[in-house]
Amino acid sequence: GAVVSQHPSWVICKSGTSVKIECRSLDFQATTMFWYRQFPKQSLMLMATSNEGSKATYEQGVEKDKFLINHASLTLSTLTVTSAHPEDSSFYICSARGIQGASYEQYFGPGTRLTVT
Amino acid sequence: DAKTTQPTSMDCAEGRAANLPCNHSTISGNEYVYWYRQIHSQGPQYIIHGLKNNETNEMASLIITEDRKSSTLILPHATLRDTAVYYCIVRAREGGFKTIFGAGTRLFVKA
Image (cartoon, rainbow over the protein chains, first blue to last red):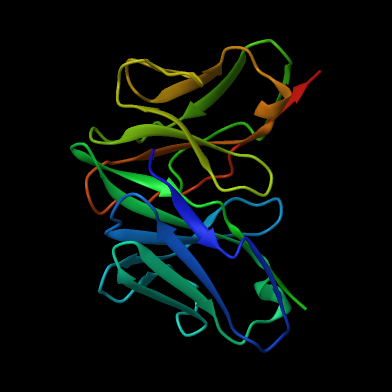
């Protein structure tokens, strides 16, 4: 089956620094990638949608200058949390959409736990 | 916004069938019913999906009512490892869709 990986699986950073999270589709080409954020005991919240080679589309309330998304290839998307603060501590999950047979399917990565101290 | 309604939590005895309901009364004709689950601190795991016919795979069965306004996910023999949050999602399969998660059902499988 289709596999999506994320790196790192967890990261601790100091307040004010930036952190980059990578999302890769390992065995398929992902024309679209999604980034979600999940706080403890809450559901996944969609942050943004990115299409390869285009600017990301952010959901309402998500700061695009703080959460920089790059989708430079069909197998790689990155999320950079700029000037991270403790309230940015969360579980970040990426998802990739690719063609499976005659339709599109969406596959999820294992998540990245970000802790900002 | 999520288009589904699920109970907040459910309990199930180990070895018994777990039946998780989902209401999706506003589902469109081209939308499928998808089920994912999320075990603590992991990414969502795909379970099953269907359009209007009942579906079964090695993990679960999906029963969709004839009017497609509700469905039930059945885990035939629940184990402790099935303890997770289960999300019922309706979405299209053509390009342009995005998966929006509701609150899901927290299933506790007890020994």
